Amino acid sequence: MSASDSQSLARQRFGRFAAAYVTSVNHASGPDLARLLTMAQPEPHWRALDIATGGGHTALTFAPFVASVVASDLTPAMLEQAEAHIGGLGIHNVSYREAAADDLPFDDDSFELVTCRIAAHHFPDVPRFFQESARVLRPGGLLLLQDQALPVHRPSATWVDDFERRRDPSHHRAYSETGWRAFFDSAGLQVEGGAPVVKRHNLQGWARRQGNDEAAIARLDALLREAPAPAALWCAPRDLGGADASFLIRQVQLAGRKP
Image (cartoon, rainbow, N blue to C red; front, side, top):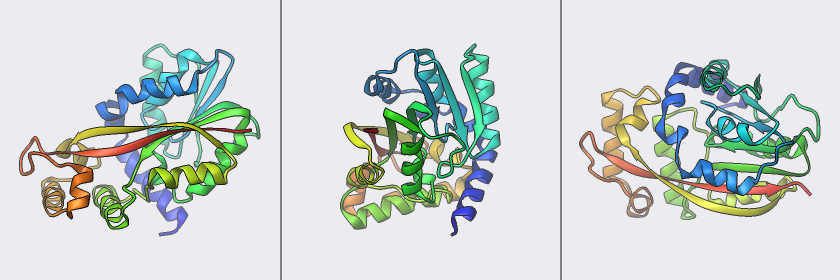
């Protein structure tokens, strides 16, 4: 799939399911959002950019602590939902801009902070996303990334990536923590810290958020039942076959500073 086709698929799917991401508990809350604040130590004069803002939860988290936030996203419907949600809470220092993560419409050295949470695994050109993030950061600025982490064991990594893609065809690719760190290095960003994030997802809610029907959910359940032992250990499924079926999604948070 070409980069343009991948972006078109992502825009189509997230436009269709935008509202579900605003209300998703796993996206809207959790200690990982507070940890991003702790990692950033934002200052009142900062200008921040939240790439692939989705439901706007990261932009909303940082808005009270900085001068302004630009919430960008490839999908207009997501921006509309995010703006309605954030504006409805009385937050007025957030602006909204349609933008692809690998072609940011901002000048060099524009932001003290760039954030991207649970989105980069959709990007068709991850190296370019890191390069663009580094470009728009001011010297001394910080890129905060939170995204899915794959196991180092390659067959298990392939299985976990494919499982995610079966639920959401716009999933492009995730990486191990080592892989994500390498992208920071290649973009000239110095990794200063990192932390794991482990979230247990209800299988049905996770699948339905991307429009999967009962038959598709049953296939995902069967895949978890049949998972190779290392992949099963990584995903730790529970209560398969019923409404309480769940599994783990493992992520990593990383902070990289522009010299």
